[in-house]
Amino acid sequence: MLRRIVFLLLVASVFAATGSPAGAAAAFPVKTDARVVIAQDQQRMLIYERGLLIRSMPVTTGLPTARETSTPAWTGPITDYWGTFSSFGTTQDDGYWLFSDRLPDGRWNGDILIHGAPYLIGAGGEKVYDTGGIGVAPISHGCIRLLPEDMVWFRGWDPQGVTVEIQPLRDPVPTGSKLALGALLLGTP
Image (cartoon, rainbow, N blue to C red; front, side, top):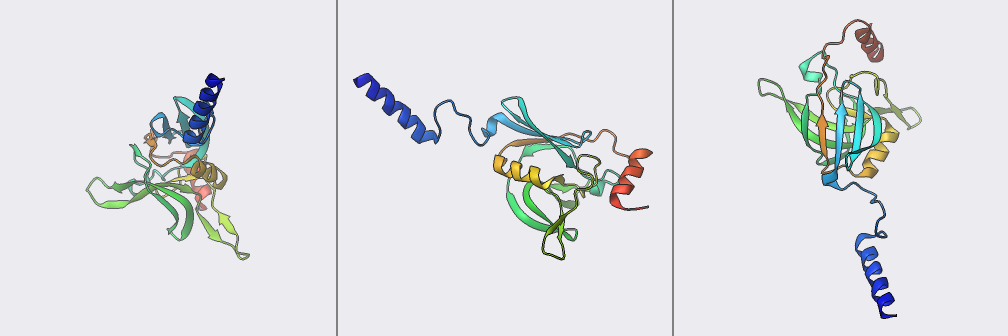
């Protein structure tokens, strides 16, 4: 009988300390066992925990036709949560700061974040999202954009402190049909 009581107390203390029964999956990643890969050639965000791919989401990265709008290759932690912010005449929700981008001559080129799709407020007060290019082509000003529903999941996953690797775009100059697709997405002739 004493063994059962000790066992139950031990199980109860583990449950109280972790908030979940022993062996249950955590709601958030173990920061040292998780990583995010931004595969620019695929326009995908790949989420890994314990070396296993747990989620793949479409993104759009920076427009590669100029260094000022491209997304540079980079590895480091996801840090500050910026929440909602405005830039380039639109609003973005759930921004997570990655790093300050510098041009080859050392000039500041802006901050690179992961955030939800940009939007404007419609006539009825609703958010009108610009999801063009997400999962299709790199068209942002350098940040990594997610679809609104994927951004909700990402924020709930709690990415702060997780390492992100932004892989370089191997074909930085769109040609032929890619250039035509980019122009179509941007609404330019």
